[in-house]
Image (cartoon, rainbow, N blue to C red; front, top):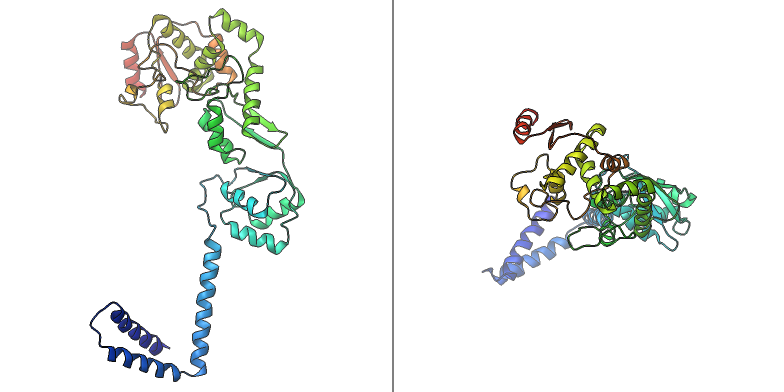
Length: 377
């Protein structure tokens, strides 16, 4: 067999040179072709069997490899214990479902899923509804759930301090919405008069989607989730809270904007009303708020410490460069942050800085503040 491959390779090289216009005598080619023909005529049935088997094996391996990798998707960087929701609607084909499974990281190979569907003869047996899966769930388990109609109640949690981008990603990762669609609709979503649409505001409903745990009773949609979360915030702003804000000469938009800054600055409960008081004092004396949280809002990714260069970013959100409040909230505040703004502490502090564990240290003068910064940072 080795001699056969060697002679075939030699003949191929000579023929290639001749076809490329290299100086190879035609007679040599013709002689080689004659020798090659004689050689093939001399092969026994055992030789031809070996060649045939090798050819079939190579072709089979190529087909299997192509079939198994054609729809292979790069695995997502997901927590293996994460719950991912999949909405199966009436009329969706097995191929449609396979696309969604790959898109959300439930499987990485659509063809493997499709083969299992064919093997199980389950293509027309899937039941519509919302299902819960984990990343990299075996196709057999997925098919069993879809056939048996093992639907689930959709439940998701948005933590306090999440911004619109984080909310969109969380919901997308859990298979509930398309991230780009959520961001696009959030930009102009303003169902209440106190929510502003403005050219300087990134997302109209930023800060007005209440951070909470939600249960969906219908198929998840971007419109439905935005409406539900905004209604939750509106319902939590009680008449008493609205009256208190009015007494402080705060609009609801200003209240939530300030509360979002407090939410992002304070890691611990006791810090919230003190930080709120510092912001109020700075606003009163016309001093820039100079809160790093507004700089972080402008960056593509969070940083442990903002730089001097960062504080020079030109933006109406940059509270190092502007006086007063930014155009709107930078995140969704929880009730504790809202209450802290409505009922701030009674202190004379004008400065604060957080240590590496998130505890804030306060001072009345800039000189004192600088000393504390040197000690805790």
